[in-house]
Amino acid sequence: MKILEDYSSLKLLLISMVSAIFIVYPNISCLPWELSFLDKSKHAHHLTFFFIRYAYFIVLIWGLLIYNLRTIKDLTFERRAIRTFLITTIAYIIFVGIMYLWNGKIHGYGSVVLFQYFVVFILSTFVGHVFMLYNEQRKKEQEIEQLRIENLQSRCDALANQINPHFFFNSLNSLTALIRKKEDENTLAFVNKLSDVFRYILQSDKKGLVTLDEELQFVEAFRYMMEVRFANKLEFNIEVDKDKLNLKIPVLSLLPLIDNIVVHNTIDSQHKMEVTIRLNEQSELVVTNLIYLKLVPAQTNGTGIKNLENRFLLLMNKQIRVENDGKTFAVYLPLK
Image (cartoon, rainbow, N blue to C red; front, side, top):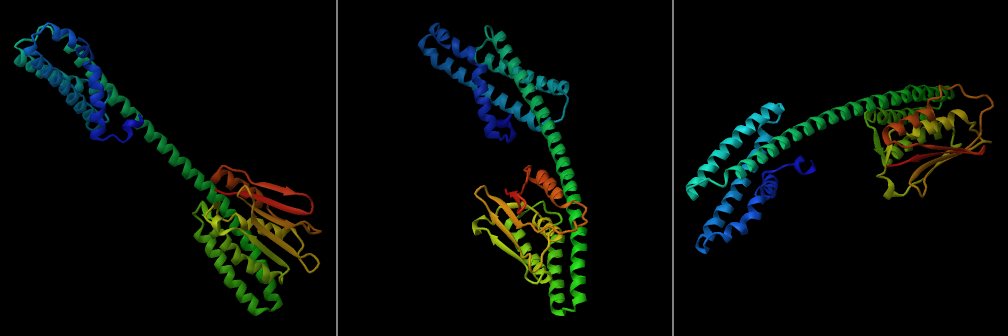
């Protein structure tokens, strides 16, 4: 059906020319035999009529295909067959008239020509009906795919919305700590960066995938907040080539990873934390950090890594990898 998916008049004409060759094949095979019984003076007359017959079948098949594919798209098979049969019958009567005017007789042609028109009728009817069924199937598949995409988007939105309140409460805790220390300049800068971060979160709410460049720019804003909060005891080392920045990643993939580092680890003058974000040879984004687990485990809802796993499966049909050797914690994020 690929040849008919974007059918044009020229394409249908080419199909008609090939089909007409098969229709008149009995005449082609009998042509040398017929010419042998005719005087040479009548050969040109006979050959001319043969090509007229071939051209007539081309036009008839072409017209019936256009009629079946464009005009009667939604009819039942019975109604389609009736209409096509009427047109084919009229064409047959006209052709018999042409034969009579050309040769002065129709004897010897009736049964063969009748069979040829019957084949044309069957061909046109079935092509039109099968193509209609094919189109209906495609529409159903497109509707199912649209529903699947909408369902996928809803599930992704639900997962993304889990991040927002979790991050919001952690940010408020950080802001509260700065206010208690009465660090006005740092508090103001923190609020400004917090505004930038939330602007990215809100603008990206309906995006499934973003470029790595967009996600790393978000990390830059988030990094300032973390550096202010931990007095430069939390450092970020980003190693990504510029020619790789167009690779795609699910939106807000890095936020839960960085947030987990802060929530589950002790970060102070004795435990300086370095977060490395780099690309490996498999074009995976690798986020690595040292492990300084808190003595008292943090109370969390456990949505971080699990949330990220679900979103990568939904949006990219790929799995993330987590490695923990007791000293370092690494998460491997596949890119697209």
